[in-house]
Length: 590
Image (cartoon, rainbow, N blue to C red; front, side):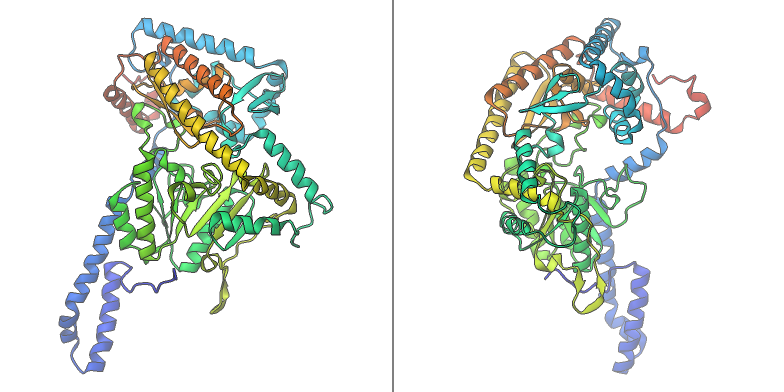
């Protein structure tokens, strides 16, 4: 059982002292001895528990990552500043001849993008200003200091109306090879999901899509497969991955009667403010601990505070870059900001050790497989790392092209009512949960993903990606290009071997070569399992061409160094935080 009785000494020392005095007074009365004598007898016990409280606080301080708190503070203090056109080209101290190359590079990119945006797209792009989602993603492609100038020069717009294999086609008929993976949804290829939606709709077509509440028989085609894949006996349906994470956290808190949720720095668990302790959430979160990844101190903390922790939430995709910031080019400022680990050894060992700690402490281990579920294999990260979770969250690709969120767990953790306290319930339900219009494509997806043909595709896709990675890196080395790629199954990322203030520019060169990326840029790219050998070669050629062009345009100037970049960024932030606003218009950061 995950349930536990709250400890007597979980609060502040002064509260503990009051409790102990009351306890000692009662004990003394029953034993016929004075309070002083009882206090003398129980003083060692009191000292032990107060010391334990301080030890837990100290351990929490050591094991917690300072990044969310520091980033949150800076978000409130750093005010807007931007580079002029002249400043833009030389923020790293590059000489005039290098700046001239960069200027020509921007001119080439501007011309290329203008040619790639046809007349229909240009007209429709103006109307996109009323869509707040686009305003957000467009603003957050690059570090904020560079945004105004880039937006004035490079206008991106890809309004798509068709897909052809791994290519997407815009309203003017212009094609781009898609390596965005639709935020993780596209595992098997776009044509496959077209078939899932058509087949799924046909299987539920006799029922109106707004008949909600009664269960459609197609649900029984899904339940057994989901339970077998997750290795867990119960599941519930939701409309997104974020909503499913909300459900998982709420149920863990309800059924363990504990408040704290543990997660690890760099992991993303959706936009819900309950799992976003850093920027992006205006509410200060007190019931989430964001710990250092791959840290023995984190394991010690979980063991020490096991009676307070409702769940440990894991994003298995962190095996590619544990402890690093979310993989967005927005935070890409120098080469130290993006690294990867030896995932097969370090992260696998870490997860197995974490599993043991959670098992011994009766703390639920929750795998957030919204991204990795069915991406890393049929059973996702549980299969890949050989670790069984107590609760698993799915989403994205499981919907077969439709929005979906699923939570799987043990009967104990999935309970939404307390059999001993009938008025105590956990209210988790949704109007469109298990809607037949969604379950049809889900059933079609599961029918295929559990076949041997699908298993063969996983094996081939992973092998092709590993081969592509090795060959691409070797060609980068042969041509002395400061770029490398790394992958986790068919998820891949771009790494940089030299420091630069302009790494984020690489996404524009990749787009100019005809690759479609998500708004987070080069941090997270994907291959779908319909990519052929020829498609992998096309991506490789385009990546190499983009790297050559960026190098030749001077953005990876060899005079830059990580130390000077860090000092410059620190100066800029201090300037933005503390210089009075009425002086900023005449001040320059040098």
